[in-house]
Length: 435
Image 1: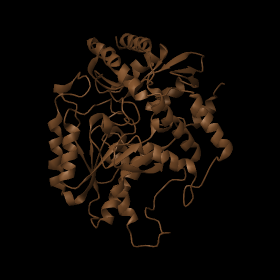
Image 2 (image 1 turned 120 degrees about the horizontal axis):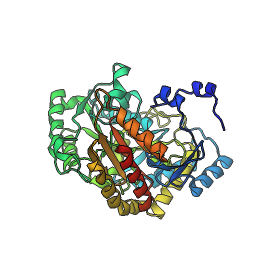
Image 3 (image 1 turned 90 degrees about the vertical axis):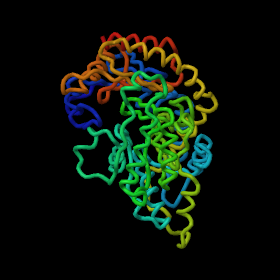
Image 4 (image 1 turned 180 degrees about the horizontal axis):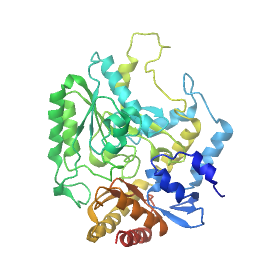
């Protein structure tokens, strides 16, 4: 199907160089397994699982059949004051994947919404506890927490923030990329002490003014940045000492990407609130969730008001959408029954060995990896850090590979069932593109 110039003009695309794209459109028309097909009929290997979303691959029969059956049965149900059975089934299933104690699920329409929900829960929690001054947040430089105002405030990718003016009060920890831990395989051995900065920020702001610390266990969109050994443990300890909530943004980490059900499980640190999205429905239907400890949830329920009154005046029209719930139930069931977490753990060492072979390319300045996620930092052109990743990604597109370019990095995150031969082709093509 041909797209007209008027149609191209009408769509203002997200996170896209619209001027360049509309001169040379890259159009997907079909997908199956680990491959797309573009409008020229070419087979394109999906090197990012959609957008970190489709770890089970594309066109998964069981998910599609669940969606079709749900649409034919209950296409929409009001999410305020009324419910449908699949939302409660999915909530219980989600809690079987989360660390013990994280067992109350609030559904949202996306990952950005999940983060926004978590921030509002944190502020409201402290207000219910009689500590309304605890309203500030601490994020991290290079952190990505979606695009709503709360997420932008705690996020630390400056290019996403600078044009939008005043945001919520937030401080930011330093990033954990250092000269000592470049080209680390998995978690860097150096850099755990960077967590000590948190103590100073809290004391400077006053612990009585801080609601939560918000981190990705592994930073994804900034270029795959695993936490140094001991870093998250120390962050958790400092939060506990000052009675500050810890929120883990697991939109990318959660549900398989790291070879475990969550980044919390992979790194052995349990937060007070966790957000998930993307892999929750295998990317087929938008959905997210904020998952909280029961003691946080119970504070909202323990109020002296009539039981028909709202405990938390927040939600979305599409919270717990029945079609999304059907997709989520199918996706999570497949993840467990076919043990995709183990599949990721099995292939991850080969992925690691292949991506680190690119160290010899002269324009490669750092490589980071964990599970089935890898980030490659490239040498900057003068005053144009984003140009070389764009050029490399376009060369990869010409060769039949889709990879993500963002900032000064190339990012790789194939489907969980990726084969060694597919990784061979991907990284040989990337080596050639880098040279």
